[in-house]
Length: 188
Image (cartoon, rainbow, N blue to C red):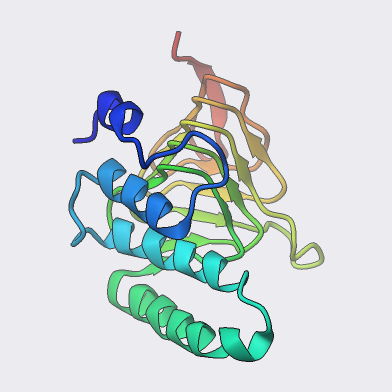
């Protein structure tokens, strides 16, 4: 498992938001236990590639990279069951712990150091508001099978219990469990 020392001591892992594609992928590789075969790492790497290719101008130079991205995205989605579009605002060192039935809305924001497990859905709640999507703070721990719907904000260091259905904001360091999810306390 990755240690904080690994992340701090590596000279190529900058602390700014200006990391290059390979620096981001290396940081994600370390966060995923230095195992490039993990489906979560592969999904995050493809998402990072998708974001990177959108910076290529003019569009005709971007075209081959877009074709490659679409093929890789579909391969990850169909093989591992992880839908993580390039339009997601993905923080640093996000870990997708397991594969299978993970659906993330394209307008989601996921903060640094979050953990997402199998069966998680981050999506919109109402058909008439298709762009509403959850916003996760830093170090959010999302349990297996959890569903987070709508324009809700999950505070930093919050826990979302397994199979919880979150329809309202969750405060910082709180734990939300149940259907619909209720706050049961903080981690302190």
